[in-house]
Image 1 (cartoon, chains in turn purple, blue, cyan):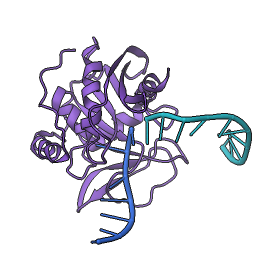
Image 2 (tube, rainbow, N blue to C red):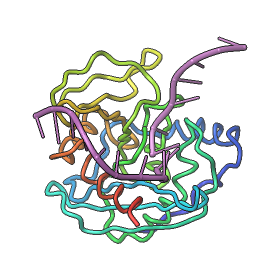
Image 3 (spheres, chains in turn red, cyan, brown):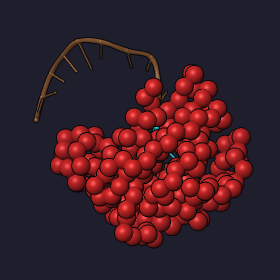
Image 4 (cartoon, rainbow, N blue to C red):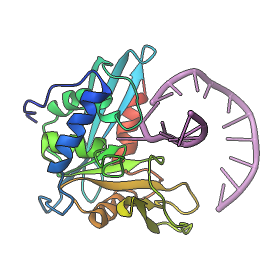
Length: 221
DNA sequence: GCGACAG
DNA sequence: ATCTTGTCGC
């Protein structure tokens, strides 16, 4: 797919913060999907050479049967350090390279990391969604910010993630008795719809099939 | 000032 | 993210 020019990439957290605070106003957290959903994609990153180089992976699966239809990899020197709250600046450049090689444009992309469940409501899922204008969902394996009520052990149960009196996402049990996932809107999708699609992409394991495939591509050798 | 901190 | 074997439990 064709990726149009994105904003210049920052070299300091000050510049990065300004970009987040500017682009956050463009995030859409209501459903604006292109239905029917035929393809869902997962994106993930892996690092090599002591973190000097990064490898982005994209896996496009058919929906709802979740069969792999296309994958791509892209390598690039790591250009930004890992700083909590600024993950997107480290990972998105390579992800864009990998997405550019994809022929099948996905209707929804599940990102590894938070969406609006972020200190400035602009996690990697929001950032990627804004740049490519495709619906995105934040699917994080661990907590970044917010509080929530106790979560039942059964698959499918969820609780809103709250921060400063605002619902910023949800803690979702994708498998009975296993650590929950942190779900939030990335762009052009509501929280409840995001939860619905995440569950529909997670038939057996804790992680959605999209993420599992992308994970494997990004870290295998 | 102290602690927390996606991948 | 990454370094790493066997092992407990469904």
